[in-house]
Image (cartoon, rainbow, N blue to C red; front, side, top):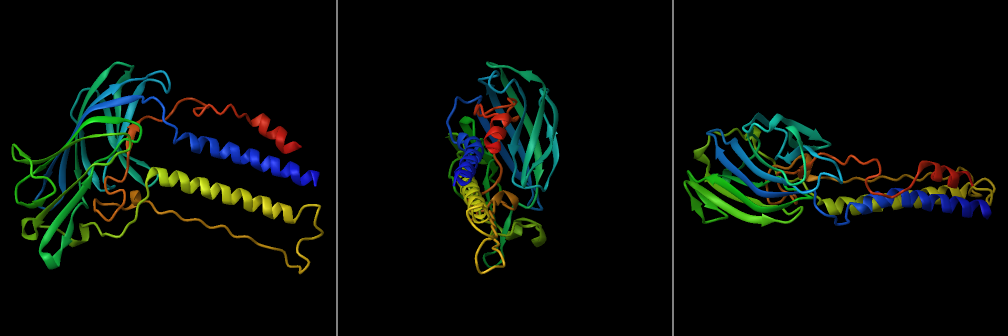
Length: 314
């Protein structure tokens, strides 16, 4: 019995070690940065692909907690992106950046920026696999969600889509030949725009359209899923070890042992999203933000490996 109690204590300590960092993601802290202005201008080509110009006014609020601002990532719809060009002198390097199944534009700056400094950032990309063809209705449609920022507020967000040949739009406002959507965004808030064209407008390729049907999951949903998976695994391990502990004599009396299979699967729209309303996180299916944390114990758990080893020895 003493051995089983010790084992249970060890497993609970492991659960704490695993769950604290995950739970800490949901804890609201002071933002490191603020985006004063975020604009995307979209001009379709004759083949249905998109030329997109990004303008971002970024303010550094905190250069102590995680260090100075060195680089940022901005989500883009999918990996079919090219012609990536930085337009401002503060961009030292700009490129496509894959992180898991997500695609970003990574921008490395010319230097490190401190609290109180502001950056004006401009760049352009060429994006493919964005349209959906409705052959029966003779339509081509787009539904685009700009890359969002889970840890950064956007004071003003603006999307401009060239109004030529558009027959339907989710906004009526026009400005200098563009349909205009405008709003402010809280942390992790999404911003979607949709337009439709007659299909004869584009010389499209059916093989290069987005195929609907991918599902999505928010960041909060992913965190809850991982917490659930970890708890299931921990209790499964406790159960299995308990079966073979000294309190039993060879497992189940029926012989043959016991095998437990644990299988989990999560599908993220980030892997195949292309800007459609049926995709829960729409497109771009990636968020954005500054470079990752630099502290060795970012969540400040104060849990040490040697403490864990002491518990496991008991």
